[in-house]
Length: 114
Ligand code: 5GP
Image 1: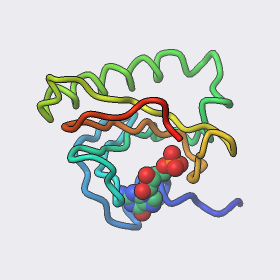
Image 2: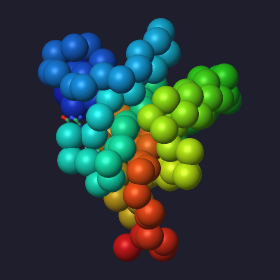
Image 3: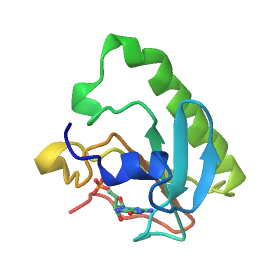
């Protein structure tokens, strides 16, 4: 068995996280190294490594994740806008090999990223 990722350990409640949303399919929690006043991570419970490895069968799950981003953005008061990021692979800056969407907001965010 490959070693569990840190996010799988959070799903399995083996390590703590500030969970802000959970349902049968996904989990959202605060990033431990927040880059904005609101910085959440939304992850599927299904073990998908990244956006580079999604499959047709994940279509409904991915749509669900986007709807939860919309719900969280409203609940966290991000009415001035927000940024959703899915770093993917080495060049994309991904450091945890479990698909995750960053949700950042409550400050103006620069573009382009570094
Ligand atoms: P990536 O660089 O892969 O796009 O994002 C991984 C994110 O996970 C980083 O922003 C990092 O701060 C966050 N992170 C890494 N380990 C933990 C952890 O144990 N708990 C929480 N809440 N966030 C983590």
